Length: 547
Image (tube, rainbow, N blue to C red; front, side):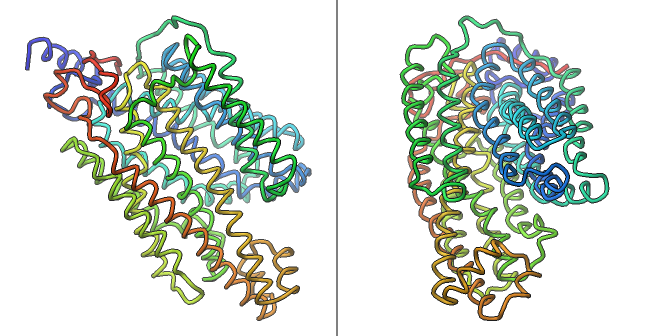
């Protein structure tokens, strides 16, 4: 190790953060101050993931208090739209003006939206305030990922994969339980106010402990690109939200939204080629690894959220499980995902190798979905739990490694847009997954109900959309039996689609090139090229401090 490298390492250790490069083979424990920052980041991530999980159980009570049943879906849609549309913009602002200030701003906006949502006096106000809350949420996840990218070298970053996946598991399992408890005992408004103590802690910790270099933008914000991207993303999200539910897939409204979305995104691509500070620099897609991870991330979001939607429905409708503890129904999947993610992260940190994980992950994902597609009305909870564990293990190999490789494939100056782009593709994947798998599921359910119970079955399906176990017990035997077979057929079709898309992700995984992770060893003394060898990245000094 040269004298310059030693000096850089000593400086990084004293400052409290291991730099993104130049630390040759010495990736020891993170200093206490960095661990404090990471704790604050995990709390913020929990905020972003918990919100919809906590609010969902409160929806019936909200409608009973505020009215406006016909606009209920917009409480979720407004939040989702604002989150998806603002995600890439937050990433770019962080790259241009400095990560800390932008991140703190997103937390403040999210908390302000939470307070206003809790104070809403009618459904219109709640929808508008949820949009404000979603606007802040768009910067939370991106800020967490980008700051971790600044503080921790990619190789060391693997150690925190399990932590991030664990936060997701806690949100998915505990969110509905917490939301139901709060609504029953404190009122629905506290489903929003509960964000305040967590947000205040994260805000105080980040303000006091995190110190990142201030930046001065060299160019102006790409306002035209931001508008076109926002319109394009919003149109696509509305297509996936309304298609097959509010409007028929072939309706004029859906076709118009598709046309607007496609035209806006095409215009966005042209603008990005000429903008001085593009919202999403197209050169990041020249990296083979970044492009492949975007594809894998999109598919992962697509199939994962589809599974999260239909597995509880199958267990409640076919296996007679209670909806009260719906998060617990996914425990085998989530625990397997968390455990495997932790192991994969540790192995990545120890060896610097990662290509095997997307391959193994997609293989397990395909096997898991195929096994789940074979479930029938006689499948036991133990058997379905084993199948879910296989799928969860596959997801564990994929959830965080996609972000890690995407960040390692770009220069530090593009860390924000890389993080936001990877997050956006996963978000869009989840929207398309819920819509397309949902359409496939619903069509199959209606067809089987008509086959097995005739017109009575069709009417029962419309009248008891997603009936609870209690409602199922009240149905005539022939209708109940038909519905259970219909749900089994619907999940079969949806999960087979998941297995097919998993095969596409597997093909993409085979083309990933194992580029050394920055901070992983002697290779960091030399320029490190991206997966294609297109844009070499020079060794940089540490860019962040935690004091």
